[in-house]
Length: 538
Ligand code: NAD
Image (tube, rainbow, N blue to C red; front, side, top):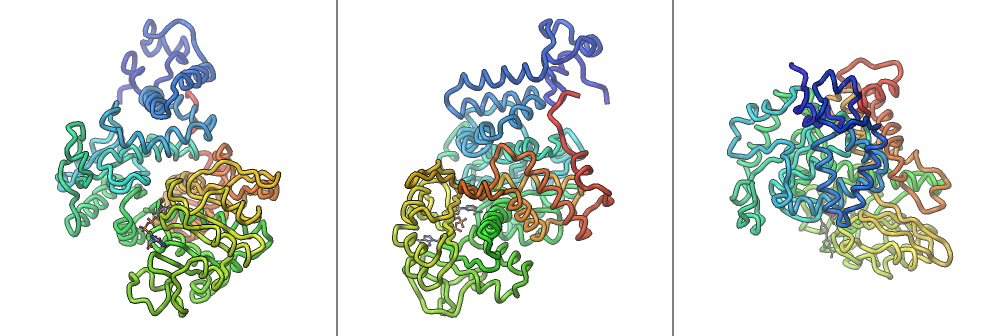
């Protein structure tokens, strides 16, 4: 293929260096006169990025600026994001990406990724071949139905795969040229969008049932044929579809669902870290969930796997996990339980008061995945403190308004004894002179590392075991000193190092289980590092 030169080189985001092209390169590639005279370093360019970013007050405007940078100079974009993840990740991904998706039709710039509609079901291979490279290894795919906590955003959901893949690259070095964001357009039930002339997706209600499943199947077949080394990461599908699609394909192709498995792994990582730091065995933990839906199911299943790995039988493992939903405690006598809930129902008396269930079951940890803000009330936290020296309180519902309790309430009502982590971020809390830093179960410690390990080893399947290894590896990154400050997860600014450590462990597991499609190298860490993208001008 002819090398891009001159004007078109400056408009090629993967190759463009802007004013960092050297004098020799400018002569060689016909760039003289197209750039001002002085040659800049990437550090100087970074100074400009930081400065320009600070000119914007609203996060959404910072997002637009950064996406523009992504479209013009990919290296500089990734260098900037990796330079200070705690500042850039919330702009490139949650929470700003949610707002960006809602307004996508109104702020869209250059299109990125692939839009495949159900009307194109018979031409999916052709469409995939329109992508600029034939060696795609990693696709993040959504159908836009349950974007973050924002509901059905139809094709505007494309912002999620774009942002998520940017994190795969900036947090773990998955090479961007091998990644592909995709939105599957099956319509939308968002009435506002159906009326909006600026909504660019199919203007019809969502297709469901067999027609939907057939479309997903056609997509899965096509993408595996066109890109044989592909791993599909499903993102922000509605709960029932998410579980069904994952169950259908996880044993046939390389695939995982971050909402279900990544969330489960990061929650499990928190419990492993806590157990180690409390000098307790993980198998001594007993969990009581508030909420028995998709998120609870994903987390509980991973906890069962971890218990089994640590020597419990399936029955013993299930015995350590209790659930409580809108109709009360899950007990065997209930007749309203869905198939996946029955395994977690116990032989016990019915109970419709969560605080009382705490006293009865004496869990070491309570996990909120109910969407009910404030459900971990004072009585619940006090009862947890009665039955535990250090009660583990995990309100995981998003957004913040749905969190089952705030960090402040958990510390206050437990008299500073709670070990706290949440789905949404909370600021530090000072209680009786001691400052606590609440943990946030952020999947970003799991999925980029998974992506890197899968990419490097060309893993043929993604197993629960790999996710448990990832959880254990994240937990290993917490020191006793972190724990004293209330930290049970690493700091996000250390994400590059954490991702490499975690990816190494996952890759080891992939080789050990015979699921790699490349030869086992002598030095797995060096091998992984050699596959990583570095945001440097070549
Ligand atoms: P879901 O609708 O599948 O499940 C909600 C569960 O909460 C149901 O079992 C319901 O019976 C129960 N519930 C509702 N009201 C209740 C009440 N008053 N008392 C007790 N139980 C009640 O939802 P989900 O997908 O499992 O998500 C739940 C929460 O977890 C959301 O806030 C979401 O942001 C958060 N979360 C979800 C995921 C995910 O992958 N789905 C991941 C991380 C966090």
